[in-house]
Image (cartoon, rainbow, N blue to C red; front, side):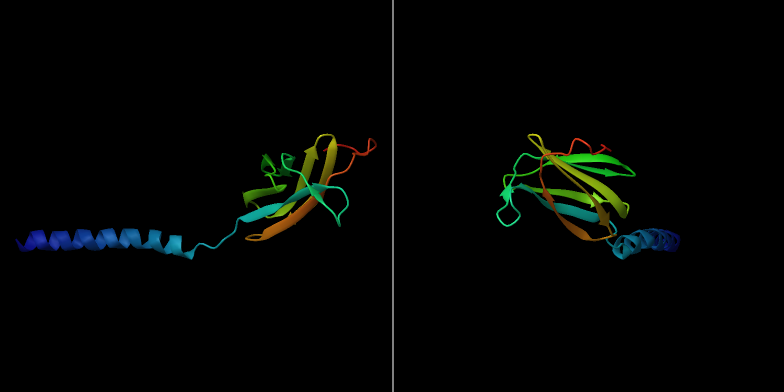
Length: 125
């Protein structure tokens, strides 16, 4: 009987010791991923015409992802990592905007993309 209680106690303590590092690791994590969000518009900056349905593409070292702006011309990319410089491009019915964006770990980066007629002399990425 005592052996059974001792064995159960040892197994419980062993289980707690194995689970403790997992719980500590989960509690100790800090936000390292970033969020990139913004708006796409055309027209004059003081009277912007926000563009729903514009395609926004994010180019980085780990790949390319795209999204479409919502009815208010807003877009968002969650979990952008690693930190660094990204190339952001938007297009809508022959209009175009692009810019480099620096993303820091855990930051929320706001961007406004002003759509214009593309310059035919500009090189494409």
